[in-house]
Length: 252
Image (cartoon, rainbow, N blue to C red; front, side):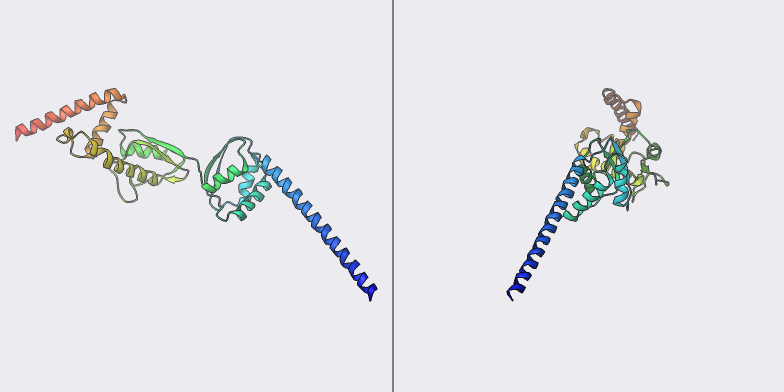
């Protein structure tokens, strides 16, 4: 009976040693993999400045391949992304056009993709342009999807000349022209509500509303781009309007 117990105790002791050895080996293996991954992540960076476009539905493997061509290890990117995804379920790469810098690290790249910090483009609408000229500017911009085939309009309104606020506007890749026009129109409405109130009330007898003021501003812009001269030219046109009003009153 004692011999059986002795044999059993030796048997269980051997099992414990085997389990301990396997656990040690597993811990060492995990430690080596973790250390290797840490080194890979630490060394992961892009070789040069790079602009990439990520379309909707692009797989993480294809995205990693794009970075791989520019020096960022493909498999390190995939592994690190999946680790981040486990730790943060809201982690999600947004579609769009992105601009990355040389030596940008993997964590910065993923943060940018997750936050959707896409590249911004600018388009400038100078003062004094007709709707047709504005349409041509939008049509010739390769970054904009042109969809204004029935004139200058927003989602709700067909616009007349002078209803677009001259300014520089931000947009992102594949925006539709109608979206940009909608923003321009809203900017014009906002400007009208804030700036038209602050006008010199002495012009009210000559200029009836904001639209007429925009038309006058466009005419002055066509005459000269020099700011110091614009006030003089505007004064000339206002004097003409005064004379016109005077003649009308005289005839009445």
